[in-house]
Length: 238
Ligand code: KIV
Image 1: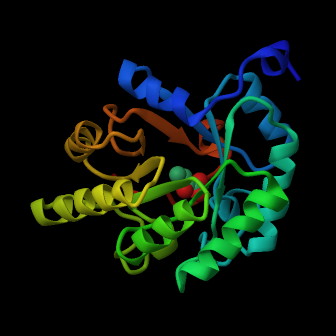
Image 2: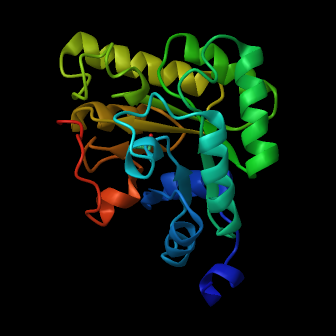
């Protein structure tokens, strides 16, 4: 591990909020194993996401849908062991949080207790807003995720850009505002027009982290395997 990693101060949510206020970009990258974690830590990233993209990038599934809680926990624990400074976000897999607040809290507590996550990420607006509120009330910081939400890509018509009509853009913005009001600490926006991202960055107090959402987000999240050109499967069209 680098000297940087061992001596630098741990990233906090307050530090991310200060970055947004100062207009300093926030850097989030995915990692799925111990060496990957050490690489992104040494690079000085702010936030590490053990995304359920692991399903496709490292486990060989065709989508993020089949990955299980136990598979995600194993990968997340390996990443935790490789990190000191960045915030660690665990990604709750499809089917592990949607049905009830109780289910969401029980799953999220496993990611915090068993894998040392600082925050958990959940997808969509709608009923997910209630799940986010319940998690925050249970003391678990939450990252929202709107726009293209891969866990429900089939319902969205496939891996395609979202928010491209006025009504669809307003729906994304409404979901984002509702997630902030529910207490989310951060929001990932995926595959939406840059104009919509711009509105979100100015309307929301929480950091807006984009992927395929233009250059105006408060930060960007990149998939480790995309960064290194290691994944040749299907990507969202933006
Ligand atoms: O699973 C993942 O890696 C993600 C990012 C693309 C935001 O959700």
